[in-house]
Length: 320
Image 1: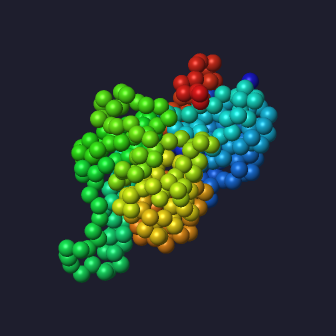
Image 2: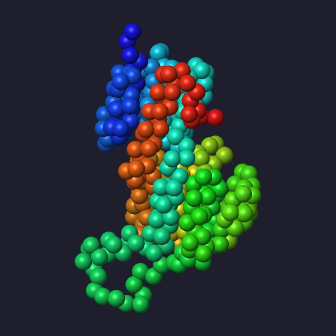
Image 3: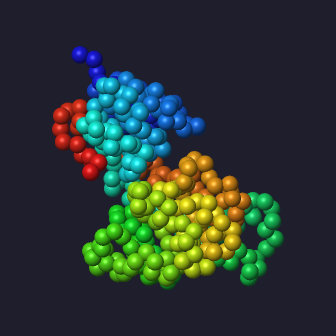
């Protein structure tokens, strides 16, 4: 009996592939860059029994419906908005993800982004590398204090709570908003539940930790940016389309808010051209979870879900 075909849409850490090879024929898609298009992914997975996809690879309804033998989909991401889960459910194809693994590393990355944006680290490093540094002055690259500032967390899930724990070390006042009140987080972190409008008006730093859903797309738009303090800094390490990127660029250009730090983009990997012209925004290439240990754990977790499926065991992380 032939082994099942597992198609991995792009290269992943070898530890995960080594787990799968004794149990399946493993085909790995081309390395980056550029990222494969939706049509290229559709062609790549056409004969797959199992698709092992990555967060940046679009797996749309055409790809899922066009893979006649497909029995299971796994992603190594904590999000699964790149997968047409509805199309998978139509065919009763289970989908798994990898929740909880990248929480602490992503919180590290988001907090680092906040510090970099507040203290103008990217801008000042470019200044030094350009040979412009001529000595200390009391006005050189003045930024914003993080310690004892008010932090507004939009989405008090696992990553939001991990970020709040870091903020306690900086003696920050923590506000949060969420679809559901988290009284356990309030007790643990001393966080205060407020509406989104209140959070935007009161926070020195606003950090986004929500999944991408129809109700969170452009959650931060031009109107909501105007609700923020002129001295405020926006951090997004969740999903790019949560922010109206053009509206953010115009707000940064016009001084509506002081700064921003972005790890994700609305049309990733494209970046709004106006953002590239601005000094008051830190731009990272989707690396908040990019520690070697965490990326290996994410990849292995997807492989573990696939092996559970092949063994007829309960899936470890089915998409709800």
